[in-house]
Length: 315
Ligand code: NAD
Ligand code: MLT
Image (cartoon, rainbow, N blue to C red; front, side):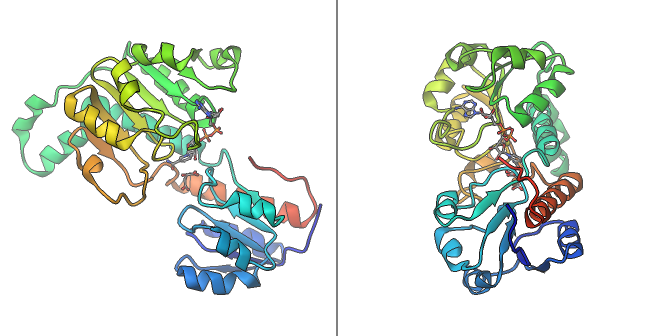
């Protein structure tokens, strides 16, 4: 399939390499990450393609206004900010760049596991407040010999497992579509969630946010885990029930959390992010120069391939 793709609007902060590749291939580009919703609705009718990260909400009205729109590209993994049903109804292709930011998201996950186990965030806060004596309250625990439960054994879950095994962690996990023989190849013992909960010292989630994973980690799950279990979410806000997490942190059932993502971003309420047992980052999983360059190049090349009638790629 090939079609006329002569103009593309980039409405988020996407690496400049994306613009360069599109322009080198004769595609006219406007990059403007400061458009208001009204301005986006006015601009979009002029373009064949739209490229976004997560800030632009590609809602049904934006898609409907894109009279010439044939393709929407997400320079990243999750397409939750794009109304894919509306796009499909109108015959518009939605593409992403799965894999481009996998290593960055995996590395941030491992960083948060380390921070939570050693209270790095609390130690840093104490130092900035010149409170050396707080070190007494900041006893941590080793990762060596502990069990990490990985929910979602796709691209990021697998890379997290491989890295945390080098700390001596035992890695167990669950994924409805990854066969046990496959996860065993990267050192993860697969089991049901019911079997996994009582065994884990740390849980990290790496699934999409879908009805089956919304509030997957909830009050009932915390109750099935060991007291002091620690949880990490670098996937999507809402996979861990935020209110249940706060209750578990307060009661001590949860010993700490590392959170990069929130049900609303920025959070409407910063109580969780400000909790002393929480290390929080503002959705930085893909925020490395390497990942941003990769996703920018990948999405641009995919657009060019499509314009030239080459095979499509994406999740
Ligand atoms: P992936 O598609 O490679 O893996 C996701 C896995 O989740 C799949 O193997 C799937 O079978 C599994 N899964 C689906 N439903 C499940 C369930 N109910 N229980 C257990 N497993 C289930 O995706 P990925 O690239 O590894 O990304 C994982 C998540 O991380 C996505 O939500 C993505 O949007 C997010 N992400 C966040 C950042 C960030 O900046 N924080 C960066 C990249 C990706
Ligand atoms: C993704 O799904 O790719 C991430 O959340 C990172 C991003 O927002 O770019």
